[in-house]
Length: 236
Image 1: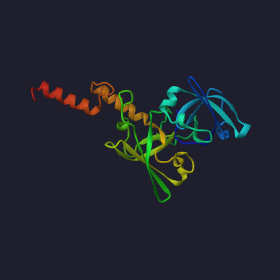
Image 2: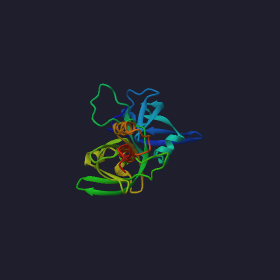
Image 3: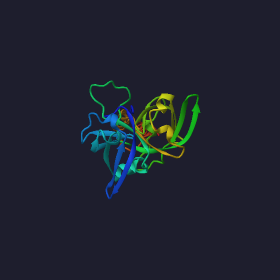
Image 4: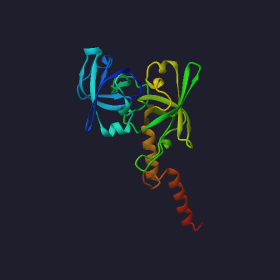
């Protein structure tokens, strides 16, 4: 479990591909390796990955992770290049203050940056979700203004949602801009998206209560329930 509060920016120093995926080496990561062990989980740009090797001292500290093809397909990590910075967060400890929101670091999909607009010292960014498919339904039901979303592993508050255009927006204050990689990404770049897990469970529960299956859509289930009631009463 993670909080979406980025601890450190690491740098991709090596990428080694194989048939099943690739191995990433993340350098300049010493500040988060003080309590690291092989097998620990670290969120890299919002994707929960397992540490396979590390060195706290060499070259400012580094660790390696292996990414399966599923992870490369689901996230932006397959597009990272040597020299790119990435957001890093260790798994949450039970003894720490919980400051973000519940983040599993299980990336749902990627979205594309469609606009960046300065607002004083802040930065407003708008993203567009991909067209939904049967394999990857729309995430829009889980996005609401002032709700949570994790973007590249960063816990952010939604400032707007446009269901028609499949877009949503966030605002980054100056402090946040200095601590994460998102401000470095241009229009057209992809970002990793994880919607609020609580919203997923609520949506699933409503679907089950209405007697539907995942993918039917709550609106369709409500319409069906109303039609069933009217039919029982003999009202067309």
